[in-house]
Length: 359
Image: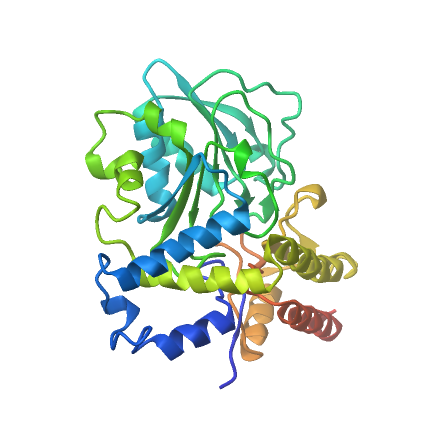
């Protein structure tokens, strides 16, 4: 079969090799005579899958020993509420770096539980850039929260701020896309459906001493310590999603780990941004050049009619998901880890051809 080139923002492309292996093992996993989806989450067969996924994550991200790796549910959206529920006491404020819609949603949930401060924001230019925080000192408050990559606007933090208070990051759309020091963060969370696997799984990486700061009045299932003590098996986890995560992580190791993945992602993004920048204004990038994302390439054409034509013809050429978010419009190519360099070259060739035919 001819596969469609998938530029969807999420759920997004998965490595073909991982999908083939999952297909091969779908009906009979490791000679159990059952699918992974049918295994008890308390069985030794599933436990091996679970532990393998945790081990691969720790290895790829070089996660220090004083951190917990949790597999939760509810997506980043649940974390927007779970974090302030546990870590925002009434006598402190949480600080937020505002760079897009997901920052806004995280802030809105935190306001339900306590005091918040917008420490910096790029809302003045409709989130076209990452604010400069080099002159800010983050030494007061419950925690500092940021969104590392902004899928809707196509911006990404190139360097992360230093903070004397806990640093928390929503990395849903660029985790495992580049090297960074996990030790600089106190809590990282990421929905799996962009770079890690299928939807339904949320990965949380948190420093163990954060567990001592938990709200004792929080419901048991909404406490991180509950899931840490039970190795993410307090309730039935999304077992098939965790299995697929392990396959994706195996694939990443085969690509050269984070170093290889980051090199590939830089090359992919360069192909598309070079195409946009050399188009003499036929395509215009949405994000400011110094804030451009390597995961979500956002751009516009001169009018809505031309944009619709572009998206339709791309679809006819078996390229899916190129429409921009409804709040921004235009076009967006999400080029997460599983999207290949050849996929990006295919899109660039189409963009050049479309420009010649429509100038």
